[in-house]
Length: 208
Image 1: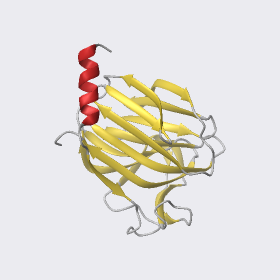
Image 2: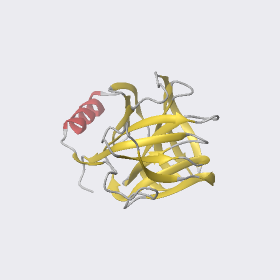
Image 3: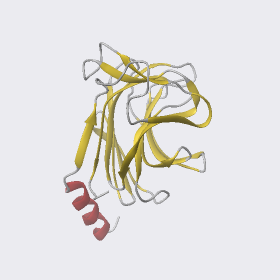
Image 4: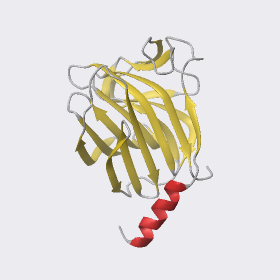
């Protein structure tokens, strides 16, 4: 990264982000949380529901994915962010094929978005871009992701820079130009992953 890019990135990360945190505690159990839409990239039958969980960091409800599909997603569609952050607490519960949890941003539709994911089966963190329904790898990093334990996954993004952190430690810091402009934010899983999500936070450092 040249000096101008570095200074621009540091200034962007220093800008105060206008954020919001969603806890799902006021949402009806057994249904999608209000203001969210769900689907799958590819094929499958995902099942996203608000459920009670005594281990939830917010103390009451969580968002649970218990179906299956190529890449199930659930997004806060009304949100439109170009540069900012997205963060969630997650708990991998089960999955014979995979045990993944992810966050998405700059989500245009179910076939076009960025996703960062942590995997308890592989013990790694990875960054992808999805275009025209196809997922492409940007970077993998080994990282400890214990199953049946709550973790925090966070992504900071600005311009073409992306930083991915797990449990407060940064694992990925790259430049990528594949998806630009504003988009929605949300959560994501893979295959038969049964995953809990809580304390979903997002914020914008640009006026969108």
